[in-house]
Image (cartoon, rainbow, N blue to C red; front, top):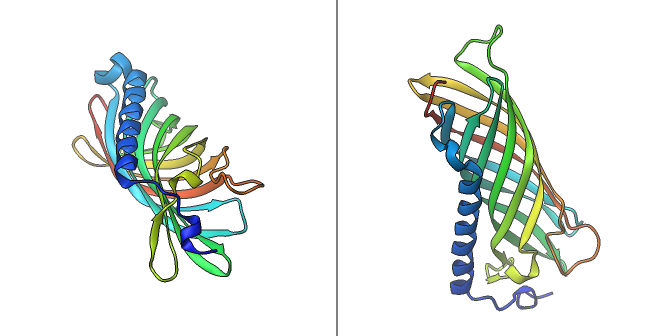
Length: 223
């Protein structure tokens, strides 16, 4: 199958407009969730970035590394329990075999997640180290999808894929104090999608992937 058969006539201008609308919608959802607790005592904000490795449940696709970059807000309801809201950009990449030709596929997602988090504070642990585990839902909106063939030709294929994916994210991480009101942040997470990401093929097209994140957290209250 030639690249032209994979490409759907989607204009970049319309794609970027839709992308902006989706970003605005995600921001509204997050601010509604945060509500009046935005300046509560045990609150922190921060950023994260790192590599990802996703797999689409179809033998035509093989794994290719991607990346994710985002921001998060955490409000600790109790000493050991908090809620984290995240907003991120994620590029999920893969190789797609088509008529003996290997194509590179890039799926650009805007992601929002709500992650209930348990913090291992106190006990014999030093106050400068706080491990954690988390589990919660994630929603991903497809901003853009493109494909590149072996000769370097590229094209938009956004309409070939589902506009939204929903799934569950689970992971573990650690916060380490590196200065006054500054914490180094690291986590490893696994995300399982529940929606078929490609619309043109039969069978399971769900995605699943691993991510490693590094970042910084800046407390706004009594951490």
